Image (tube, rainbow, N blue to C red; front, top):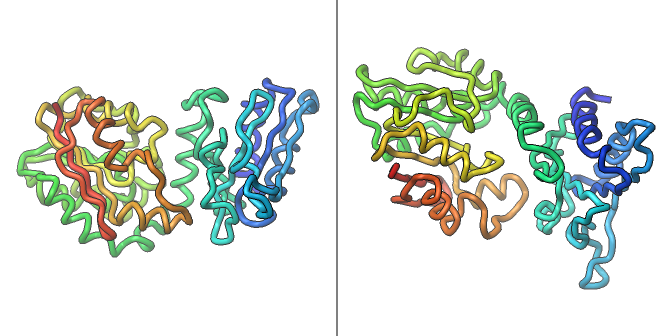
Amino acid sequence: MPERITEVTALLAEVLAPRAPLTVIVDGGDPGAAATFASHLAAAFPATARAWRVDAVLGLTGPGGGMFDSALNVLEPATDRVLVFLRGGPRHRFAEGDGERRAQVVIDHRDPDWPVIRRLHPDLADVDRWYLSESRAFFAARAADWDAKFGDDMPRYTEAVRLAGVRPGHLVLDVGCGTGRALPALAAAAGPTGRVVGLDFTPGMLAAAHRAGRDDCATLLLADARRLPVADASADVIFAAGLVHHLPDPEAGLAELARVTRPGGTLAIFQPTGRAQLAARHGRTLRPGEPLSEERLGPLAASSGWRLTSYEDTPTRFLALATRH
């Protein structure tokens, strides 16, 4: 069995075993994925935890009658039941249901040999128990070919930097910098009197940035966006591409970005594609109340030290700008 599957199922078993007796229901993913993952998860529990039952539900009749639906779109979590949802690949059968919203555990399962926990309900485990290691695993698998896959996005980064208002002499933090695609444009805008720092928590992403020579124009630091190694009120501009919606607590994450930004400083939340287009790439549609939706991002920003000043969501760009109170 691949090492990554062993790591994920062992972590889940460690978190869940003390709660026995309990039933775990696994569903979602490509055909057959739930049964395979359920068998691996069942095997991860120690003999002393055999009061568990782990089931793969391969479809049941939904409340509309006559149609097969995911169990996770019908069942609700209960004290004696844990729902595990697999985000699948192109043949994912239940991408449009509410299974992911209802589930206490969400697994990215697009690569069956490299599953990654993307959400674990706080009632099951504190976020620090899993978030950093699992998120690093998610991005580490993508670091090597990230630039080759998304290299045509560079002009959109340059334009986003221009709109963010970086000026000569500014201290700019690129938080969640990944392979550093924004760093050359940020450094050019900040000029020789400014400073640009790229921060990311995945060593493989920073290694790719080094290979691309982007450490020539910026300082690269291994850091968690939730706990930045930066002094209070020191940054003029925060550039955050593809970051906020990955954070387990977006409000707390925005508050940490506010902590390190001077009053009047700017936050640029950017994606080189629109939200709907990005969701479609991942086999889903947008839902109300997502962190980057306009109706939610404004209040999130306001409660964490920011004032949202502009919001743009087009097929070719998402860019929200906010000013530090």
